[in-house]
Image (cartoon, rainbow, N blue to C red):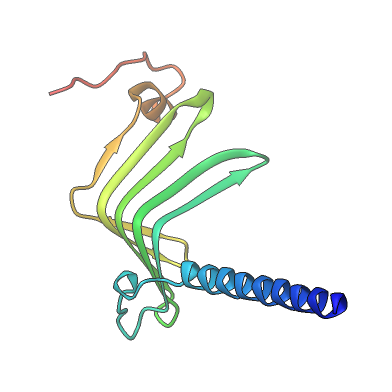
Length: 146
C-alpha cells in the first residue's frame, strides 16, 4: 500500500517535471523565432543584405581605415557591394582622422575601389591633409577658408 503511494507520487513528479520542461522548451523556441514583419523581401540579384554594416582594416594592430554603412547589399554576380548612408574614416599619423560621408556608395569587390555619391563630404585636419603635398623647402600655409 505504501509502495503504491510512493509510485504514484514519483509518477506525478515525473509528469510534472516533463510538463514544465516541455513548456520551457516551447517558450525558448518561440522566443528565438523572427517575427514575419522584420523580414524584408530582397530583389533577385541581391545575395545578402546587412544592416549596420562595418568593416575595419588593420595593419599590425593599427586601424588604418573603417567603412560604416546603414545598410549593405552584397551582389555576388555583379561582384559589388551597394552601401547606404556611408561613413569612411581614415586614420592618419599622430591620431589624426579624416572622414568621408555620402548618401550611397559602391565597392567593387574585385578592384577594391569605392565610389561615393550623393552629398559627399570630406573632413580633415588641414595640416595633416596638405603637408604631404608641399615641397620640403616650401613655407607652411593653410588654405583660406571661404
